[in-house]
Length: 380
Image (cartoon, rainbow, N blue to C red; front, side, top):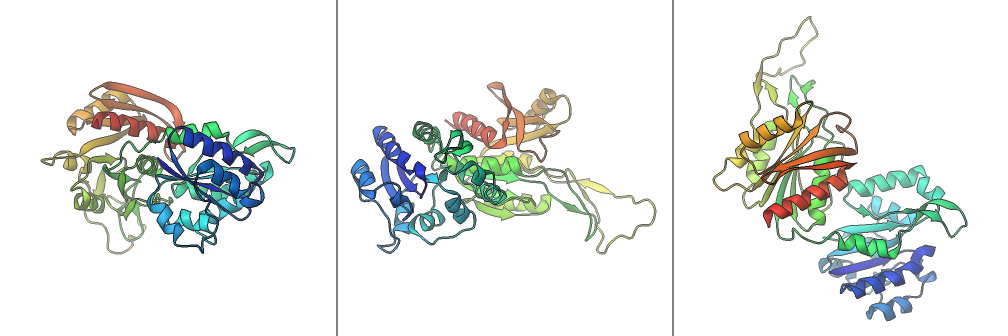
């Protein structure tokens, strides 16, 4: 595994030396890139001696921000200061390391390190949320004694934990093509009103990010959400179920896996109004079923590996297994609808030919990674 280790200007920069040692010990190839501020905390010569390669410091030497990113399996920034996180949250590229992160075509991991009040600051929280939505993976921070003498959140994760985290994210799905649907669909009643549901799209976007982390090439077809598409995915925005079906069928050729996470509206209005319907007593709408996107894909002559989702309010096992059989798919993910809709956590059951695997409540990011592991097992 080839890793670019970025070091920014915080007191935790001294831990980067141990990180280099750990990565080399497990056989990884390391390129070190430092900011000017980082070089005030630990000498570039130290990292050069440990890595056996020149340390990159300047963006003016060559086109390093392009060349380095093209050959890397991952970029890890440790420590990542509040200032550097603000840069990547807003797409700034005023030095080699930030330019490298912006020009990358590989996963980006950051290990935040800062004073507890900086970590808890509203601006930092906004930036952290933004980079997460952009597909950046955070490692830590932890809680403990800080260099300033205070105790709290913001302490950089220990090098052993960081190295173990990257080992736990191998490119198991390198070369695989994933097509993923996410979010709700909206079906017009008239130019103003729509029929929709409460799906936030968070689970679908988490699955897309997990697939990207595992080395897959991802096409994400998404209904309207307030989320930022994960970096590295081919993103296709749609509104209605019919538009989603068209986008899926236009991109399904050559896909290895189709994951239908989207909460597609079951019905649409037969004749939506061409102008706003005025309020005048009761309104009767004639509805017709929307196309079944998952069944359409699974019914192809040579379908990809299909994974469905079933959100139920009762009898989860019974209803999910009926859907698995009816749509003739190898795997379906079930959950009880409730506070999971729109939330950051969920608990799911994965149904397949190997039985039912229940995953306890956790973040949707963690659940998505566990789901990808199950898909990879089935593919292999």
